[in-house]
Image: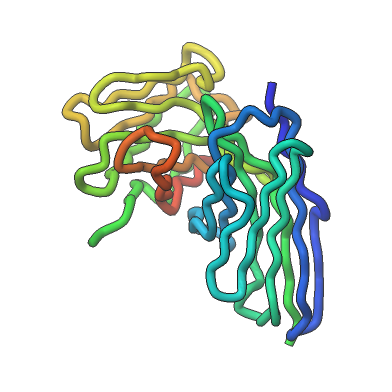
Length: 109
Length: 115
């Protein structure tokens, strides 16, 4: 059974720092990997979707990489802002979509 | 256009009662998904519909849980004889198709509390 792990569980950084969130998965037979953002009491907002044949995707200050063979993905956030504070979830798509438990990010002004 | 909507946003019920949670997907999306998210965890897959039929219900925890999508649009998740352990946020998502290339768009969720 596919297991998705996110490290760290929580992260606090000062505004302006660059940071990396990590996601690992146990079965490399995936269709894609997706990073989501979740604000307290809200649903999930899709940030980046990386197909299994791709190595990375970029959107603005966000860059996500995928190394399928090693079962790893990273989400890089450049020049962090207080508005980036949220929980970041990664999810892998095989027959279903399986999520990690998330990394709770706090960016302090 | 409108996103995925879910009603109610909050539901408090007593142990043993029956509840229904509703999901309105994005218009034209044929695939609809239900997830359950417990506190501090990521969402857990429950069931997915392609059109009117449940294509995969392997995530439903037991036979107290049932979902329908009779006209291929709105879906209702039904929970019988609720238990305290059913307390969670129930999320619905829809996508244009079930293809892996199609992004799932999530609703805000229904927070269910079973007393």
